[in-house]
Amino acid sequence: MADYTELLSSLPLDDIARELGTDRETARAASAAAIPALLGGMRANASDPAGKASLVGALGQHDPRLVEGGVNLAEVDRTDGEKVVRNVFGPSSDDVVTRLGASQGVNSGLFAKLLPILAPIVLSWITKNVLGKAGQSQAAPHSRRHRGWASKQMTAVWRASSPPPPVTWRSITAASSSVSV
Image 1 (cartoon, rainbow, N blue to C red):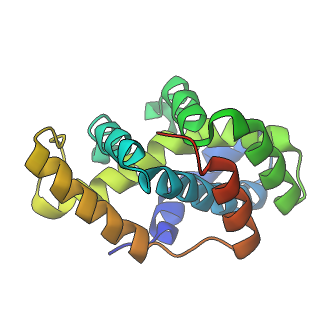
Image 2: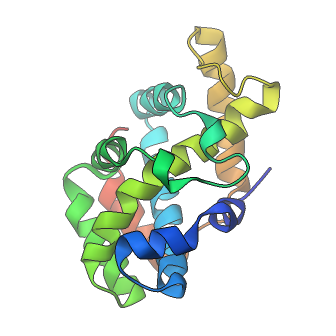
């Protein structure tokens, strides 16, 4: 099972840096912090049955082809990304952005721009790793049987993904523990 460093290596960091108005290394470091934060928020939400069902439904709306063969930033729906970030972190979104900025020593505005870019990419990556295992990369898990199967696969993705740094993990999990996707 892939960990999130695979996703990080597929990101168009030069394009992201340009979009954020920063250099490639800052974009890479920020992405390396933001991806585990998003995964942590999604994981916290998935610990609740309603949050898990919501996340499984969201997976069906994110095509894994977005992350296959490298990400084309022009194909990322930032409006969808903003919705995902609000659903993952809820009213704690601003706090998460502030904590991420502080953890990287950068203006939190960078993360306010970055999270909506990365959120659909992360969901597509999870979809690829969850649904792609059974050759269902384009099919949403609509039946009860498929939702159960997808839920088990999601758990495997969570376990295989490298955990984020402890401080970020705790702060993000605490900020997002009661919000549904």
